[in-house]
Every structure is written in structure tokens, then in C-alpha cells.
Amino acid sequence: MNTTAITSNSLPGYTVVTSGDSERETFEGITIVLLSRGGRPFRKEQIQKLAQMQVQEILSVENPGSDLDGLTRMMPTLKCIVMPDHLSTGEKINIAMRESSGSHVLVMWDDMDLQIIGKTGRLFAMASEQDSLCSVPVLMNARKDSIPIRLAPVFSGSKLDVIPLGSVKNETPTLYPFDYCGIYNRAKFNLSEGFDPKIRSPYWQKLDFGFRAFLWGEKVQCFTGIKIAYQNEIPHDDITIDFSYKRFFLKNLALIYKGDSCHLSIKSILRFHLQSRMSLFNSFKDYREIWQWVRVNTYRFQLDPYSLTELWELE
Image (cartoon, rainbow, N blue to C red; front, side, top):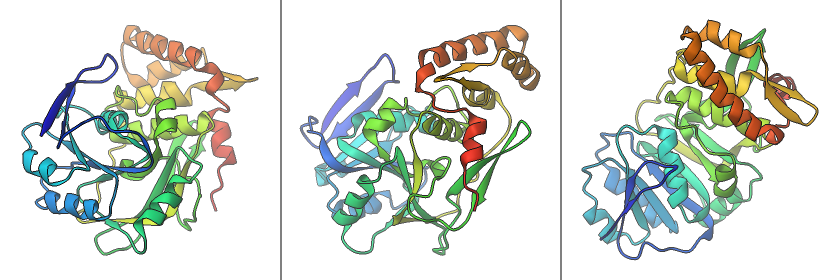
């Protein structure tokens, strides 16, 4: 077993555990990243099942104290990444993307079952050929009933709603990957800056990722070639308006697009202050940080959030 501690100025510290040489060449294909929701008794059996699909690389995201020696000895394709408990799901995915060798990365949870009918290699090849930042597979409950994965943004005045839509077809756009589950283009993911670690709420973190993808000209799409079933209850998002929402609001909903660039509205700081219930000093501090971020990326934006929803097909 080979253990390597990793430190980075941009990412939290973590440890990589492998069966031998940790230096692996990049390849065109899919790496599977397995996130841990905790408490699953058959995690080892699931990893073995994935390994039998002849996947070139499996990354298992582990919590401190996990028993990894037996797993990595048995499977040379397995790499375990031990991360601090306090990290958000998005932060963990950011780290996993850095450690992945595949051109595309399938992110799923350890309470999910990958449903493969036919040749695995061909399905994964089809998935990696999708022209999108993220391709979201069909998700099913434990009874194998499909659940809504096609999500659309709708504005009622200035209030944002996200509504589930039916009739999922291949390459149909969806606002964000449900439960983070999807096949990510690793290069495009890194260029998109990934998930914002300062947004702690999973719901607003996913929404921020999806909005940024579309506002920067990328795509998040449904992919019907792969199906994944939950083995336990499907988690529900907490959509509470909190600090995470405030950061999401400034980075996405407060934008104005003119000409070929985007900027923050002067009025947005007052609107943000009224909604945030924070002190004016803290509101201005957060506003200034996001203002600088928007200024750096001003020419990456191709439209504003209201224009995005107007172009969205709701049929």
C-alpha cells in the first residue's frame, strides 16, 4: 500500500492511498468517483462490482479512519482519497477531479447501483462523446421508477424557482446534476472552476455550478444511455435562504450582461443587503469579493440569468 499526503494552496489537505505506484498516465475514458454517504454495509462489494466492469480507474472518497489496506491490495485500479469530514461534497469532487486520470469522470454515491445492460465499454465511450460539461444519467428509486432529473429555471418577477420536467430525452438540458451525480468532462470542469467551496449548502452549490456552466456557454445535459438506481431513500435538498444563497445570488442573479461582458449592478448590493439581513459592512465585504471575481471573468459570460431562462424550453 502506498500512501501520499497532498497539500495545495488552492485545495484542502488530503491523503491518497494506492496499491503501488501512484503515478498514472491520463487516458481517454471514464474514471468512476465513488462518494461516501456513510453507513453502507456493502461498500466493499460495490467497489468489487465496479471493478468487474473493467473500469480503468476507480476513486473511492473515504473518511478518516477507514480500513483501506485490504481494498487497495485487491484492486490495482482502485485509488482511495482520504479527506477531512468537514469538506462539502463539492470540495470533495474538486479534489477527486484533480486526482482522476480519465478524460471523463462519473461521480456517484455508495448507495447507488450502476445499471449496465450491454457492453460497458461502449456505453462509457458514448457518454464520453457527449459535448457537455456534465452529462446526467437517468436516476431511479429503489423500485426502479425514474425520478425527475430534468430541472429548469423559472423566474416569477425576481424570484427564482427550479421546476422538474418530464419527457427526458438524450441531450435535453438540465440546470444542474441531481445529487451531484453525472459524467463530467474533466478538462471543462477544471476550466469552469468546479464547485464553489465557500457555498456550503449542497442545493445552492449545485445551482451555482449549473448557472455558471450555462452563463459561460457550457452545457449540462441528460444522458439516457446509463441508468443508476438508489438503494436507499433519495436525499432531499434543503432550499433554505442562508449565507450560501447570498453568495449564489451575487455570483449569478445580480449580473447584468451588456455588449460582450458581464458586471454586477450597483443596485444589487442594496438588494443583497435587504435579503441577507447581514450588517452593511459584511454585505459590502462579500459584494466586493464577488465584484472582483466577476471583473476577472467578465468576458467569459455569454448571457445573464434572465436571458437564460427565456431561452429554456419547458415542454
